[in-house]
Length: 609
Image 1 (cartoon, helix red, strand yellow):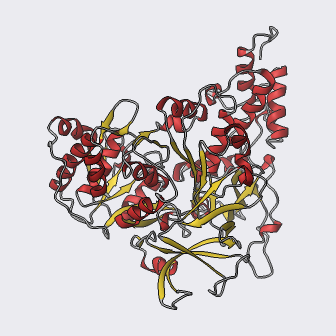
Image 2 (tube, one colour; image 1 turned 180 degrees about the vertical axis):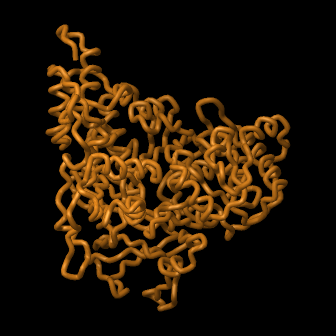
Image 3 (cartoon, helix red, strand yellow; image 1 turned 120 degrees about the vertical axis):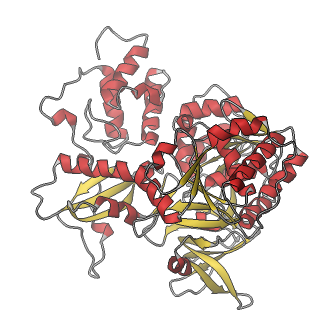
């Protein structure tokens, strides 16, 4: 991968390779600085195949360190500083990583960990001042060597590390060129966490075509309106989004004044219902930008298939994932391992040069998921990854995504094993049973719901008990793995075979999600203004938060950022004012939002809110 980067550096030495809010580096500068950092890593004992932790906040320095690790012959282990400490500790311990590249700001998160730390922010300025004019570093790796290990959710309650080799990524980028016209004039946004494999595509898709990687600040990535402005300001031409994130961007785009320079919007991470992009296509058409849906998973190196989405698709209720990339092949098998006919649903097995090496330190799980299949043409065994995803192949040769074959979920683009969440909630013995699943609220709004059975000696499910579960989830799980709803049951319903009867689980009622502050003794009553009534009407009737009151926290009631953006769109139509998440800086309550509206209205009567 780094050799291919070096070729682009020689071809486009003066093109910008990486940029953040404070600095930018050309290909030549990034090549030289990363080589200097690679030499430092070798002095620290990094050898071919060594795993090196990358525990840095987003920015150009993070990209320098990433490239330097590869040039030194190592493989990078991304550790997201926003993850809870317990999860970070598990990744460090499970991987056995010995050296972690960090910054002064992130080092504290590894206190107590048995690792050596190298502060990149202290080293890089000095290295930049004396970087060699030659970016060359003696080769220390081959295409079959490990490039990175990314941890994904694990069914046993612990995340598992996926080992991806250099050749996997090189094949992905090279073979994708047949479907895109990426070029050196493009600007790619690095929107996703480096711990999410979409980032691999964002970085190397740009670097291996001579384009610029523009790093999206973390705060901007969490604020759709700010992200839209950022895209316009930086002239981004290639943006990658999960459907959930794009839905928020689209809501902002409908009223945005600044035009975007986008050439491609590439979807991945979760199922894309074509109807989701209908409003966007109605405004922008389907040529510029082009919308592309790409199915894929970490174990098959980010992307597996390609499908352009056009205006002809928006009436479809299916999720088209198109055809496999040229270096891959899809097999659809039934429960007995037999290939299914066109039009019949089967489990997806992926064969080809994108299939990863396996799971780090998990030989049994690797053998279970990375399997040998008989080639339907030759009968010879081929190596394939068993995805657990279901699809069917149409007569036109294109594939339609159907869903999951097991309990694994996708929420906001993240693949999640409910067992990991359940194991976390069951830790302290306050529950006899727990079941976590996804619940659909329409328009692609999917949330995690935890059905909990209190321990027999617990007298009743108190608000404090639910609050304790939420606190534990916040301490140990990333935000995309924290349930939005907690439903208390006397027992989990079972089928005749003793399995959980998911059809018998009650729909999550908002009353089970969180206590209503308005019903608590001493809760302050909010004056009933027109603005407050409007906010409550939208939140209760349109978003389904039936029991929410003026002082109840929107997110504690199961509200999501997407739902909040939807409410902003409706309230903007009523009052003609612009909204951002900052409107709720003093609290995510209806009363706070009503006060914000009143403060912006020029026609409001003199009445306190």
